[in-house]
Length: 137
Image (cartoon, rainbow, N blue to C red; front, side):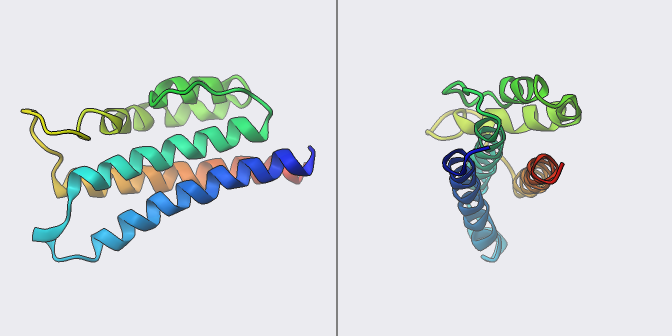
């Protein structure tokens, strides 16, 4: 792997980490002030960027899509163990667009935001471990 490609993958990871920092900062607010809809959005964005980091690391193009299930399937072409993330990733997909703008849809609850945060962190750990496993083969 060339250094430029590796650095590109790590730029995706840093951006994803920033999404999670945003969530962490907001979770420190009093519960009545936590913007659960935007926390869910940032969790989806973090997961999307972690998957794109993995694909970039493996020199695979990734679609300009917020569909996490599609990104997981693309990652599965490289590493079939990504299949264990499919259902959880699809939980986050609606947070990319459906709640970004005012709508009649019920807004995500604080419990939804906390679940999204746990899923995003699980995806982060999984992706970073998979990248590390390829580096140290």
